[in-house]
Structures are given as structure tokens and as C-alpha cells.
Image 1 (cartoon, rainbow, N blue to C red):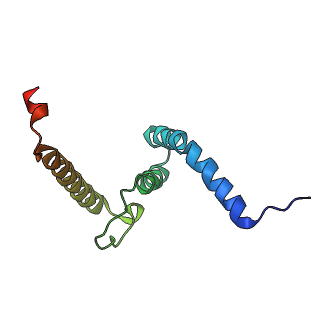
Image 2: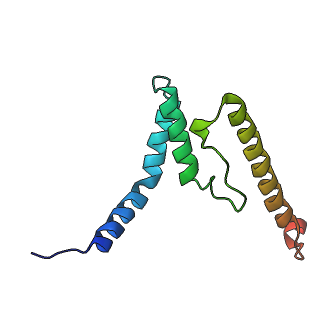
Image 3: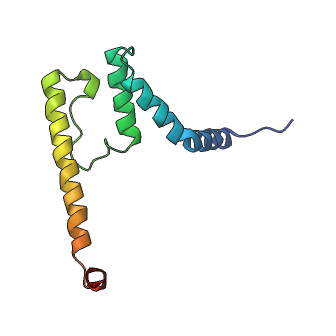
Length: 108
């Protein structure tokens, strides 16, 4: 009987999950939108979706609480800050696209 080492098993599991990740995220979004889902479960799913989407990755100081630990006011403040950061990132990407030495696309 051929033995497979632990690292190979872990890599195979990761590969399988990564292959199914888009569908898993779509399924999680359906659950988050399901009004029958308990609110605490929905909040936890949102946290997992944010984590998968890379929204928790930051160079700044990590926040003191996870979303499921926050009050409504804290969540609103965190959401407002996240939206402001997203707008700043989008604006930065837009500004980078405007800065070019090649004006051929403008004249076309």
C-alpha cells in the first residue's frame, strides 16, 4: 500500500478547496441573504467572506474586535471606514490610469 505524506494530503485538500472556492463563496452569499438564517450565523459568514476576499488583510494595525463582537455602532463605524478605504483605493487606481505619457488612446 502506497503511503501519501501529510504535506501532500494537505496540498491536495488546498487544491480542491481552491478549485471550488468561487462556488463556495456563491453558496455562502446565498446563505447570508437568506432571511431564515440566524443573524449571528449571517454575521459570521460575512466575516468569513471578507476574510476570503482579502478585506481583512491590512498593513495597518488590526482592529481590536471581530465583526461578530462589535455593537451596531461599532459595525457602522467599521463599515464607514471600510467604504472610505475602498473609495480611496478606487480613486487611486483611477488616478493611476489617468497618468500616462501615451495620449494615443485619448485621440482615438
